[in-house]
Image (cartoon, rainbow, N blue to C red; front, side):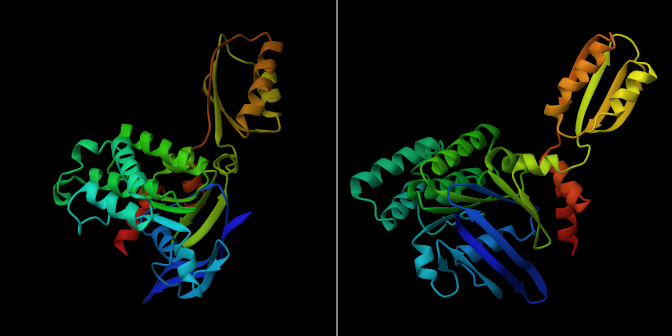
Length: 321
């Protein structure tokens, strides 16, 4: 059941259309990944849905409340982790999280427990009394993420949750976001990290130049690339033309590339379904397989497929405008 629904949601900044007629439904209890380069419209979408800024046109319902006409009701349902940490007006990480927990209405005992727990979880406990201005960008981001984990809102907007965070820290935060979802929160994850969107999201919407290009599960998006899956087969000896013709005749096979007479690269769809057919075909032809390796498209490939650009190229083009 949709907990967020947008209708022609649009935001203009003078002559720039940051978000262009966005129609989107997000189901309760899912992690929805908003994927795209910087400048695609992800953050602007999050800021409109969280009532930080008003739409120029269109509207959205968040938990059945209209962001234009009933923003106060929307704010009672949501929490937001900003792309740029909003921490500079207080002294220390402990102060930031303690104040945030107090605003969220937690009792004194629960507040102390959650603040200590979250600072420990994001590896900031030993830095809890450090001055905010002396923290690295990654440390500030950890504190910003901890705010929403303390709050545990019904709807969580998380913008670039692991920017400037090391690899170990990223995996820890990903686990914490999954736990937040499992505890009942709906999560809207805005990110330009394709792997992050892939491993976390139940569904992904790819944004580019303010528009939603495509929206589906990561698996279905990757399966939508014709011939995107690859199987590399190393044989004991070369396959004859009759065997290759049989291989080409498989419905899912798009192209066969001969690396060497006994080394084939097969471009196909739905690799998990086709590999048993390929193995049986070679075994029936009395051709022993030395090795077989499978790979499927990534969300990087999906982005290139729908935009003609890598995400890095899209960001560069956005910066030059």
